[in-house]
Image 1 (tube, helix red, strand yellow):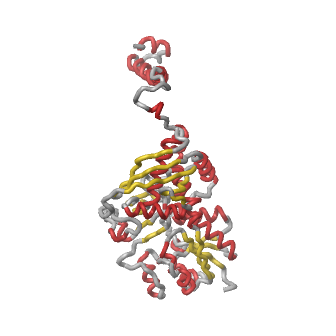
Image 2: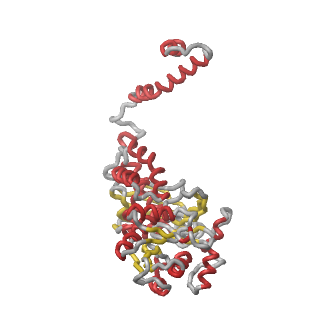
Image 3: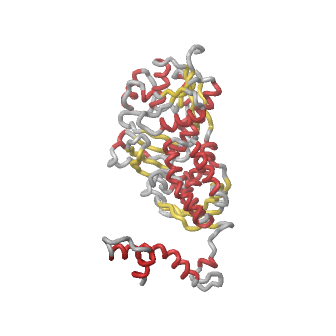
Length: 421
């Protein structure tokens, strides 16, 4: 192995990377070091070390990145209320920069000249992995077998693995792809490529079917500090444990299922089915706190930038300078977004039933419909007239132009004198 170039492969033990581990050694002559990021796949990590070493890898690094993933990637997205195309809470997109960072860390540690990944040439993940890798280590070589090898699809890989006695779980009968982490599970490909095809119920792992969810609703309270969730029902938890608990609570009630045809960065429309129970709870709870503590114009400015913030995450620009500046701004807006939100969960639905905060801007003395001594309703008269002035001037101008369509443009004074009623 000493004379062979070392490559760190992002390894899941699934169909694609199992075939790649063998192919990169046999066809390209690399000494393969596998890297697996534990970001909440659970039992999927079982037996990976034995499988990788048994398939010819010289080493495997299994990195526990669960806390880092939730703390440094998921929670900032919650602070921004980041949702792609109205539905997708970015479970896969948020995981890619932390995985790519792990790849570079292992490459630096073991002296590798290259990294490899199992993303296809049609998808977003190739961009996300590689933009992160080049940002962190510009001289790194990237090997993406899907863009160079002769195999055209997942059925080709199933045959390749059979020919070389590589054990994988994918079959011709169930070829769809699944990607899991602490924030979500995504499903795509295979039978799901038909956007009219209804996902089979036995596919879902995190959520109970809303049709079979409990008949009694459940209330849950989420506490935030500076826009970061810190406690569930009064129990303070670390980032990974808190999200895991939210997943369990939300999943029990069928919360967070999404079926979306989304626009990939490369220009292709793709159908994805997602389960994001905990993220959905946190999204609604966070908005509830912001409603009472965040200044109107600060919220409006932040919200105007969220679509761009979201697209940067989706497209893989987490480590770009523009995203890092925007991330700093988002975090600054969240100072003081602290309080408790109460949600009710019932058969796939999640809605806000209460919110409270010590630094709330909501003041019932001003908001009341009853008599008060702090607000002079007569002040609204001048406020409305000043805000209406530009609307009146537009109408005066339009009337003047309509009355004299072929003549000289009338002066302001003449127009207003003639049509000021």
